[in-house]
Structure formats: structure tokens, C-alpha cells
Image (cartoon, rainbow, N blue to C red; front, side):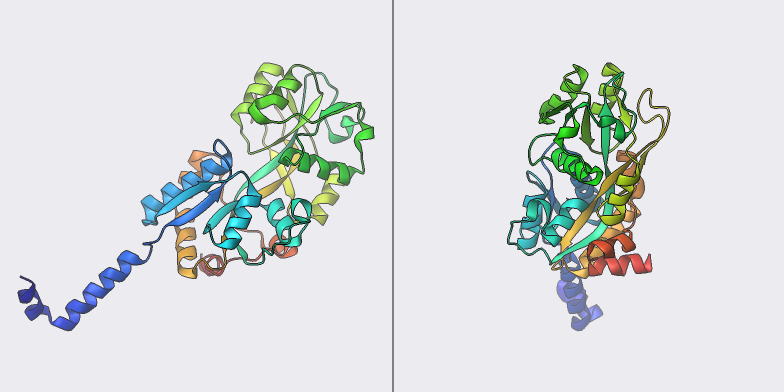
Length: 322
């Protein structure tokens, strides 16, 4: 049978077909490893969604690798243990500029490249019922929870304190309650604190429960101090929680947010990176249907340049021809 085919189409053509078939089968023969945060986080949810879309829509073999946080993912990405990772813009900024949690780490993260923005992570000020807090300035002399040491809640609250030029002395009580298993929400609900910081996408079912059962609400964080923070720090941007996102929230609430980027090493080849973006953006409806925060906005190059974030060659290729 084979000899008959060879006689009919010719050995050179048959060899070319075999080589082409072998090449196309091996284009994505290796496994793409995507770093996410720990299980039961939105990062993990999004990473698994990307994995399924790439596998089913493009035949790209992917696997998510869960870590305790962005620091581990950034280091593994830098060292080549990961091909891509979901990284918060504040953490990426700190890693590149050696600030925040990276101030004393002697590690160079200059080989990291942004593929695209995935979703916003708002910093939301949540207050209890009848606590007299509707804007950020109302926090003074109140009982607040600033989050556990080294947590993202704590980092965000420290950022707010710096922007407002406040210290712990401006509050009646400062607690360091973890958000693990909803401990901070229970403290707010039981009246142990007047306000807490929530970090995460909207809508959030846990916040919906807090709003419903404990009559909590979100307060505005849009004063001149926060505007100044956003102007100075390109990792942050303005964010508006739409009205009716939660029960009894009848008006839009203004706050600020970071962004989660899909970040790769510069060693991820341009063709693969471009194919990944083509598949993701070609299936935007799947992402939005999975959660409305997954709008998949293309990177804001003005703020990217201000933050010294570099776009991957595959992303430059994709967005320039989109």
C-alpha cells in the first residue's frame, strides 16, 4: 500500500507531507505551566478557565500550578519553572522596582513580560450597619481591621494610610484579624470592628452574604488623597462598583484597584504567545460568562510604560494586528 502511494505521488512529496505532519503535531507538544494563587481563589479559578479554553479551542496542552502567592509565582516564572502566571500589578511593580515585599530580595525580575490584562482587583472599604462611615475620611476615630501582617489586606491598608498621611493613632482601635475562613467578616458582623478592607473581584458571593445578613455596605474611596495615589503609582487605577451589584447598594461606589496580568517569561516563544492571546481573545464570551469581571481589556500602554512593564513580543505582534 505504501509503495503504491509513493509511486503515485512521488517520494519527495510524501516526505514533505510526513515532515509537515510531524512538525504540526509538535508545535504545542510541550506542556504550558500556568502559575496561580492557592485553591479557592479567583486567580486559581481564572487559571483553570484559561487552561480549559487553550486546551479545547487551540489544542495547547496546559496545566495550572497553584502557589501560596505572587512572590512564589514571580520567582518560579523568572527561574523558568513556569511559562506563565497570573500576577497582580502591584506585586509586579514591586518586584521590578524592588519595593514593598521585594525590598530586601536580591532577585532580578527584568526577564518578565506582560501578555495581557485579565481582570481588576478592587480595594473595597466595607463598613458595618449604622457606623457613620460613607467615605474614607469617616474612618478616623473608628475601630478598623487592617488585616494580618504581610497579607494583601494589610499591604493595601498601609498604602491607604500613606496616601492619607494617617497612622494607627488616628483610630480608636486597630485589629489584625485575618480574612481566613471569613474571620474579618465575622468580626465586622458581630460589631467587633467598624470597618475592614476587602480585596477581590465583584460581585463576590461572600460579600453578598455579608451585605444581606449583616447589613454591611461599601464606602467611597475617591478623595484627593486616593486620586493622588493613582496619579503617582501606575499599578493602581480608578474603579467603580456598579449600582445594584449587592443588595441595598443602590448607587455606584468609587474606589481604586490593581489589575491582574497574564505574565510570561521573555523566553516564551513569540508564536506560542501570539497563539495564546488569539485563543483567549477569540473566546472572550466564555470568560465573561464565567464571571463578569473577566472583561479582558487590552493593556493600557501609557500606564504600562509608567510602571516600566514590558509587553511580550507575542503580545506586541497580536495587539498590533488585532
